[in-house]
Image 1 (tube, rainbow, N blue to C red):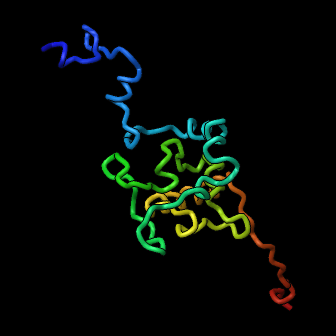
Image 2: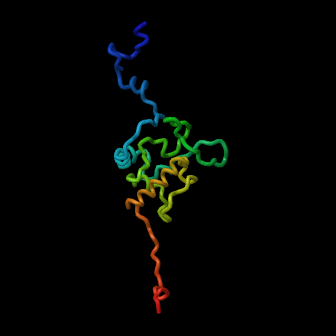
Length: 165
């Protein structure tokens, strides 16, 4: 009886192999663990990131599963109560190492239009509304800190109109 209850465990209650540990404790949809920004920045430069996404932005190869011909509006959130609750989470929610923070400029630049400097719409990137709001806040914080370049148009003034004569 005792052997059936502790299947795969040693006498002191430890698991014998790494595979058994992963089966018991690793949930790929669990998002309660907080990944530090420093690790996310290193992940963006790693071989694993290049292998998964290549040189294209993280949202280019994403396709949301839906029933009809036209894609519905983006969902409010992909993560509920610390777990991924949908079958096809958005590009940011599906990879737990993609952390939206003002210091992670490599990730933020993927969601900024290179011609206008505005953040891309959710229709194009397919990220959930919660992450879109966070993205817009973090892009503004990065601009305020001077980490993302902001193009301001040059305006020529005719100062003769303002001189007292």
